Image (cartoon, rainbow, N blue to C red; front, side, top):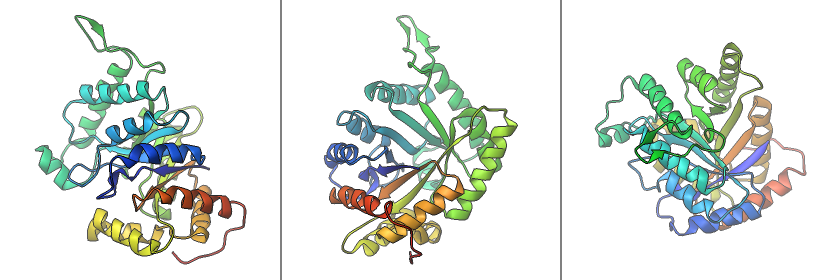
Length: 295
């Protein structure tokens, strides 16, 4: 399993200038990827801006949106230009995970109805694809095509249409942090749709979990996810918080067995010391057998 770390771009009150340092140190410590999550009406940085800051401080590490919510964004050509610019800036290291977004306040603030989202999402993907392929042109010529035709592309979704869309239109699926059973069901569904779409190879499956390590880790993690998700979603997230090495190793084993290819560990604290604590914990736990541990 490839293990990445999230940027603290969605941790309230985090000093935004820490993003570049966080990215550079994460690359130095050997993480496979840098992920970033998305909200509109929240104390967070725009995901693409955060990844741009990470891009200029790194050279090798994969950059990922896990995921970027597009359902309330009204101009797919503009969004494709922004994503394409980031892909060029990071020299082809971008994998963009896209979803429709499920926060009602984000749609309300954008004055966009949260209906018929699937059809609009697919139309937006088609428009973005045309930009990335260099098919969107004007009097001075086209928007330059990306070298690979598009960045790495993954889609999110928890309904049958979403699984089918991920299999037909992307390289795989980004699973939510909603427990092991949700992941297992999603992996099975995406693989079935992948076969139905006659796609070669296999879909890439990415899953996220929240972590915090060190003194007061459990309290910090619980306070953060309660603030971010609120009472409706908190019961789905809280059982999978990773706040110690044994719990970390156990979860890696479970997620690997469930079919995940990548695990992105999202921080609950913007303290850069979390990078070293996580890297050290991974070094320790991946050398020793897992033990059953309480969350």
